[in-house]
Length: 436
Ligand SMILES: NC(=O)c1ccc[n+]([C@@H]2O[C@H](COP(=O)([O-])OP(=O)(O)OC[C@H]3O[C@@H](n4cnc5c(N)ncnc54)[C@H](O)[C@@H]3O)[C@@H](O)[C@H]2O)c1
Image (cartoon, rainbow, N blue to C red; front, side, top):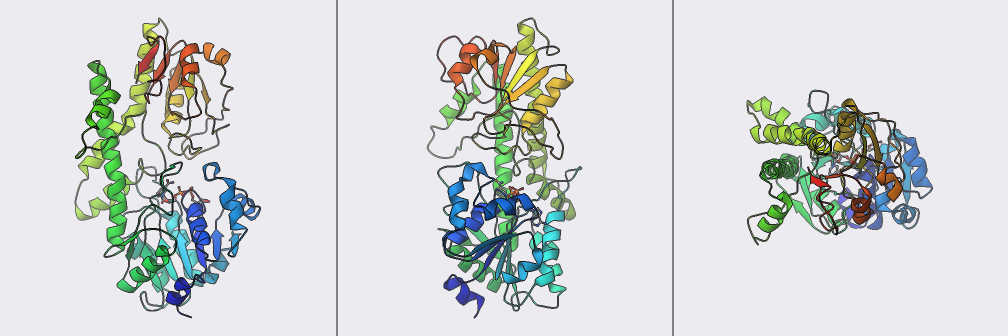
C-alpha cells in the first residue's frame, strides 16, 4: 500500500523521535487522530513512564498519557533498530548551542544516522527541531542518500517547525497552524497530507528552507522585541516612568503594535538560542546579523541589571548584598511550567551569591534543582509562608506563577524587587516594592 493511502486511512505508523516538550504532545496528536504511533527516546525513564501511562511533563496532564494506552496502537522504546517499523519518522530532538554560541547539531546528526540504518522505501522523514536553513537538506539528506535511495522517489524528507508554547491555554499542538516544506514537491505534498490528518490548519510552503527560515524569523522577532522593551524598561525606570503602564497604553492602538513585556532575561530552549543559529549560518554568506547580536547583548545584560537594582534597593535600606538573605521567587523561565532551561533565575542566584548574598528560592513547580549544562545549584525550594517571607531582607520576583499570592508576599516581605510587574494589583503600602 502506498504511503499516501496509509496516510488517508490512518494506518501509517507514525514514529516520533525525542519525546520532550515538543515530541510528546505531537505524538499524542497523531495518536488521537487514529494513527498507530511509536515513541523513540534515549531516556529510559521516559519510556518506562509512558508505558505506565504517566506523564513526566506535568503541564500536559496524565490524561494525555493514559489516553495513549487506549485506542490506536502505541508503543515507546529506546530501541532505535525499530525505526524501520514506522512509515513516518518525525524528529523532535534538541538543538542547543555550543560553548561559543555555535549550533550544536549532534542530536540531529545522531538521529539522522539512526534513521539511515533502517531506512526503507516508502518512508517519510520530517525534522521539527528548530535549526538554520538547509539543515534538512545538507545535514540529514546526505545520510539517507548514502543508503543508495533517492529522495522524492524512494523515500521522502520534509521540514515542519514546531511552534509549541508549553503552558499556553488558548492554543495547543492541534490548533497551532503548521508550516510544512518538502525537500522536493512530492515530499512536501506527502508531509502536508500527513499533518492535515492531525493538525487543524496546515500551510504548505515552497521548500524546507522557507519553513526553516520562517521558524527562525518568528523567534528572532520575539528576541528583538523583548530586547526593545528591556531597553525601554532601563531608560524609563531611570526617568521614573512605569514601563508596564507605557506598554499597556501603547497596546491600546488597534494596529501596528504588538505588546512584549520586559523581564529578568531570556529563558527557555528557543528564544535565547535559536537566533544564533542564523548568526552562525549568515557568516557563510559573508553577512552579520546585527539585530540579533544587539538583542542578544541587551537581553543577556538583564540579569546583571536586576542584580544592580537589587543591590541599590538594599543599599537604600542600609544593607549590602553581602550577608543579606535574599529569596528568589520562580525558578522556571516562564509562568506555570516546570521548565528551567536557560532560566535567568539561575544567573540571578549565582550572581547574588558571588556578591555574598545568602540566597534561597521558591518555585511551586520546581521542588529541587538538578544538574544542567551550565549550572549545578543543588538547592531545594523553601516552604513559602508569611513567617518565612518575614525572615528575608529582600524578595526578588523572577517568575510570575499564578500560584503565588502576591498580596501575601507584599504584606510580609521587607523589600520586594519585582521584575515582572507581578505586584501591580496589591493593596496597601508600596514603598517597599522596587521595579527592576
Ligand atoms: N520547548 C519548546 O517550547 C519548543 C518550541 C518550539 C520548538 N522547539 C524545538 O523543538 C526541539 C525539541 O525541543 P524540546 O523542548 O522538545 O526538547 P526536550 O529536551 O524537551 O526533548 C528532547 C527529547 O529528545 C530526547 N533525545 C535526545 N537525543 C535523542 C536521540 N538521539 N534519540 C532520541 N531521543 C533523543 C531527549 O531525551 C528528550 O526527551 C528543539 O529543536 C527546540 O528548539 C521547542
